[in-house]
Image (cartoon, rainbow over all chains, first blue to last red; front, side):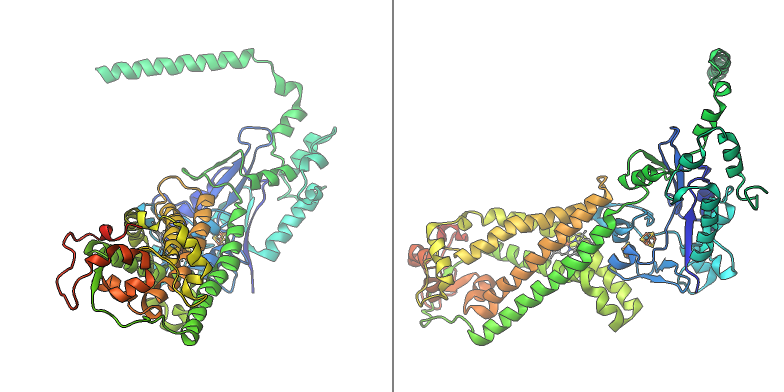
Length: 216
Length: 347
Ligand code: HEM
Ligand code: SF4
Ligand code: SF4
């Protein structure tokens, strides 16, 4: 069985927020709810870098472990979904989630938050009919054999969605191609962004998606 | 007319700003032309180990969600999960289960603490109607909060499997609603009760002796006690300390409208869990002593009056001071007319 994952290649993300918009559009989420967000570090500085993040569909999901109602479940594809009929809006999943994925339509006195909402990997959720499913959880693109719209729409293909094995292979290729010193963890700058060939290197890197090889 | 003028004015402003910008651009040193490599190097973000460290630290970031203060990775969530699920929740089961076991064994082995002498039938006012209604309201709320709180912590392991999804959904939603609305009421009333009963729970010298004799379990004489014995005072001060922490942490959880962060809520939850489990555990002891454990204690809080014999045995110092006000046998009218027991508890 596939293990569905998101991966955001921070070297490529240009902070266009296309994924955020695509998600909002695909899922028609409630007012104020934005399942995907783009976090930018060091905004405006040379070291600026952006990463798109939503629910990461954790293998050992903290939200699932702390939910007092046990309303989360994992699909066979490793997607973490939850049942809004059972959710009581206690907020525990948000406190536990490393990525700030769970959101609530409101936040009022006496802990009134409404039903939790989060990214479903465009896989909908438990409901009797398709309409009800769309109303409560948004699109179920997975059932139609499609991947999440955010990743499909990503203009630089920074955001990848799919089976963990497949997308990590793609990312690994990129890392090798770019010549990081120690895998994805090191700076590209150290390897390629200094020395006389910097312009050529950067130009090449910008096209690493379309060129089959370094020379090609 | 007015708005048209404003429009024109604004247009002129924009024109001036544009002009300034063009001027500034033409005057500025052409740095990019001089050092193209540096310029390109700056144009492309670099992701290095520092970046990932920064991700965790939660510093220097912006977020495309309009009101988000959530850094990219919040490592404390997992820590909270570990502490809540691996420590607090099993420890609570052990504490409550252990207390229940101890009480059952104690009851089976030692049994009820009976009155040593015949009742005289003379009744002494111990709790006024106001005090009794306060006590039973707080007690009812406490039990409701305990059961619903325990359901939030442990219910999912039991009831969903037994009753199915639909029943469970209503049950846990009901629990949350009762808990979140009864909590503040409980908090206010508990503070009222604590203030009302503060004076008679101030520690006295004879309380120490009471402890040494284990409240009468060590040796065969009854240690001295005023209106409240030392054991009751411990329960009072536990409520006045741990109980207040339960209320404060509950309040933080219940009103997420003051800009609490996720970390604040994790702390509040852990405090709330630990302190409320301590309260529940000790409350079991309190309930046991007040009902099954001691002959004649329950009727005091139920009717307001205790038998003279009971007062002499359990609260001898108080009895000495109020014995003259004890009513005649089988008297149905309240023996004391002023309807407040404060006169009866000089210590
Ligand atoms: C006798 C007093 C109380 C007891 C025994 C008690 C017990 C508990 C327990 C066991 C939990 C679950 C903790 C967890 O799941 O980790 C809980 C949660 C909670 N308690 Fe209490 N509690 C008490 C009083 C209060 C008070 C006074 C308030 C509010 C002022 C309050 C508000 C809350 C809230 C908001 C939650 C989170 C649950 C939710 O929002 O769904 N509690 N309590
Ligand atoms: S909501 Fe958060 S904790 Fe739960 S699976 Fe998604 S990323 Fe993981
Ligand atoms: S808000 Fe809903 S989904 Fe999240 S922990 Fe509470 S009950 Fe579970």
